Length: 484
Image (tube, rainbow, N blue to C red; front, top):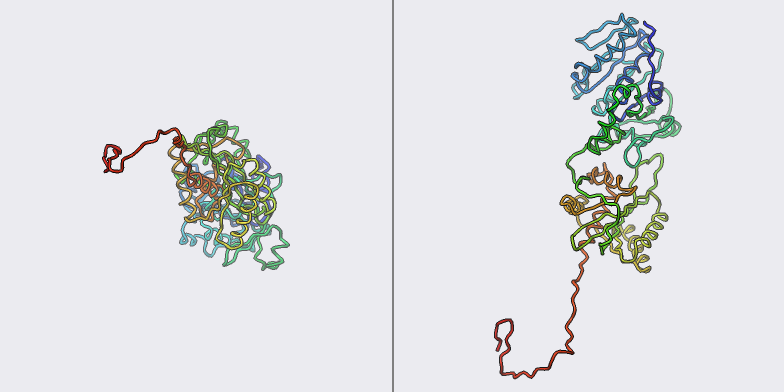
């Protein structure tokens, strides 16, 4: 084989290529050098005659088309092993050492026949988020060999897709905006898959204590290493304008492909940011305001990196022109005591003319707590409304979304604005998406339109009206009608 130097272009690429985990995932954004790294992960083992490896993608066309992964593999590996044999019909490369690398597809359950009865010492998945989880784990069951001495491993590259089974493998690394958290070293975690699903553990000790250790242990190690265009300086130098291209995409797509955010693709959903006007200040002409709270008392932990939040949304309404302004949004993930402190401090800041909405949950304990909280706020001079949901979350949100689409909603520019708009755009009001700020928005909008404002008028001063003597037998004209 030739002496060709293959080296990672960044620290995340290096950690992917040097990972000793059983399953290593790399990527999450566009142009991070994912496919090149996947091919590079095979280089340490192609000199071993016992190597039988496979690279899997969703369809054959994605592998074998012009400029596809098979072409890229031939271009790379031929520089290292000019004597290798290419079996184009079988999409297989046989190296001069005797090692074999197969390329195959895995879309439908029937495609598992491509792997049935096979044994592989290395398995790699390109664009793994496109594959069904059951198919991936079936393929991983083929990771077995007695012909090699190196560790049996699997690698995967991916782009962000919150609907993919991979989401549960990466969510511990995501911030509130679903963007991967950058770290100097990306640590190893552990999982066990059985008939009931997948259970994750932060430490090997925790996993083996419950499931045992040794060759028969179901505990597997894995590592997620996020990558972006900034981790591919070589490719970026050759495509200098690509960052501006990604920035010019619609906001959600830009966040997905530039920063690797695991958010859903832009779609015509229940809310869109281009419906609202962004302003620099609150509406000073608005006479009515409501701060609605959606309560949760959970803290972030290693085992639960993404939990529901307490959200307080302040909306004002200018009745003269029916203009609504989202003036402030508070989001916190704290326990009861700290949440209460925030509510009382915020109430003082908003003022006693601002209505406070608290959710009246159907549960007896939660309902009693909110009633007591309303009492304590009321005793301090605040007006509190207890809101009992009488419809589903989506049905309550749609009136606000309709008013926004009609052009009657503004949002103040602040450090919370982007997170707030992102949630409204992404939420589907299911267990898969967060809707804390959306729920609070629905309640604030509801109370601003439920509260009736009596029109201003003045009574005539009857003390200045001259006295009349009326003959009971005469007629009194009223509005052109004579009443006898």
